[in-house]
View 1: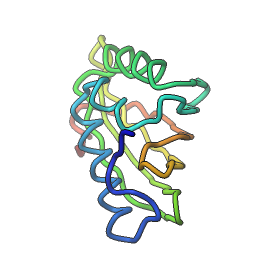
View 2: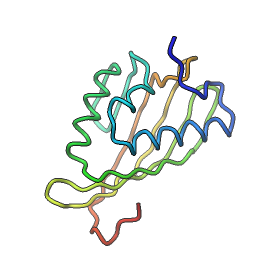
View 3: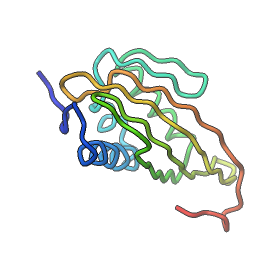
Length: 136
């Protein structure tokens, strides 16, 4: 059985580690690497997109990073319980026309006993910014 450490139940230290691992993976912009953190039957809501399954998540991410160029993300632990973690995040990217954006949001994560994310619910808002306003 595949496992993704750290495993639940989370402590403050292991919850922070899980958040940092997610940030590092997403900043790689590698859909395969990122998808391995999710269960094969993962359930996602990303804005108004609903996905089921690791392969659907991988395809979603590949498409995302074709449109969100020079993507850079920062995540922060907000709260945690036994097998759940809540994070706040912001990321910056530009589109193919050179318009920069900063996206703000919150995610709620639920993990199975093997440390794979079985549910991910993300609420995200985009703000157009000037390149000179970038922080990340």
